[in-house]
Image (tube, rainbow, N blue to C red):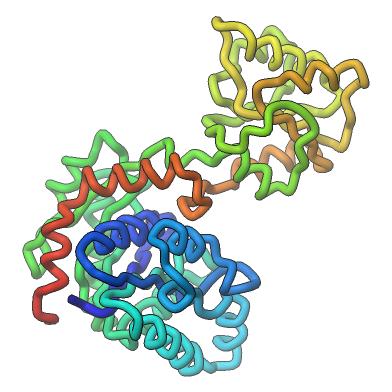
Length: 360
């Protein structure tokens, strides 16, 4: 079995963390000892990366078998100084330390969401080669047509071949559920003639939770139920009278409203207690405005969290719209959905068989 497998995004938003998690779950059942390595982490401390934490808890991995490498700030500084070799050397060193305790190590590369995706792609390809790890490429298909998704696969093949990377598998992720079979049929067979797996976008994975929104915005909860795992299915800015607002309120919508709009707050509360009306996922009160003292006792009974934000309504709505749900948030429901999707769409026996094939 290969000692290392490099999960690399070839497009932004590829869902590579789902691929890394699914691959780890598969290999956990076929190898005595698996490991996980994330060469570049986005936070200030490589030891506190949430994906590393998820892998540790999910597969009972200790620090010897599951680690982060360098922070993105450290990598940027080294690149600016022209010290790419130092990045490679440090990552190879950490990988070797992990590999000593493992039969196989899943390596999760960067996600190409930085300012220079080309530099990140080059970094991933170089690290995969230096670690002698075949690549599982993640291709994001969100919003792509059948032809565009198939073309993205061809581009990924050509770019990885140009970097002399050994391509183990391609996972097309976040595709329109109605286009799965059409995309699979449109993709041309690669040199190995093995299947390219196509996974759909799952709303239960893609939607952020109320907790993820609260953490991203740094808002504080001031009332309501402390349920941080409610899915945010939509975003509604309440800038109309109550009658019109209730006409557009949807189930699971996060409602953003100035903190002095008591009418909307009461309407959201009343709606949640009526079987004929939708229940919001959360309420964010904006502008640093506090509701009337008589409103707080009512909001305390809300079956959803109520948050307070200091920023204005427009800024708050914009920031909420930019929140991405991440599988490494560790929500059990999202992890279970991700692994269920992987099991349904990926032939695990066929994929594991590839690891025993001679390297090209």
